[in-house]
Image (tube, rainbow, N blue to C red; front, side, top):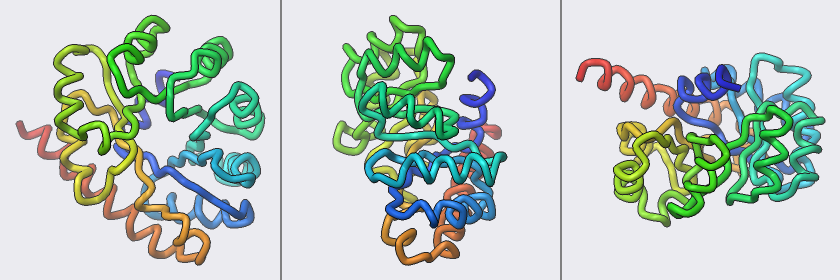
Length: 217
């Protein structure tokens, strides 16, 4: 798990995917790889999620594929049995979190309040999803939380885009960001994987710029 969470930090951004047809999963995975981002969070918002995870995990083993919008232990079990490397949930469900920890599965539960952050710390989790980031106050909210929780890192998700990705990644308490703008459902449905690759390359370029700037400071 430590290696995977470090890899996610290096990627800087995790594509949050809603896919309706699992038959498009392989093309999507190839588009992400071509764009230079070997990572994807396939959300359990559609019936195709588990099959999509299974296809990517088996056909593109170098791509770190996880499951998002995991609301129950049953979904977590199905995701892991399909090949998911990590679990992401929109909120903090103790049952889901505890099951993942008991089974040595990387989990980043969503938090929105200090109370939920405390729940994570009680379980030894110091990297948490901040969701919905934009609605909750964006970078300003993260700065305030970071001042109180100096040992916690966040993965803001929800409202993150190419226009504000740099604002988030510039913050020391941000581990990485999650976003769907690179992999919009309509792009996947239309089969416009070239556009997805272009958007991924753009996102990776922003990550590199921020990292290079940080190294100079």
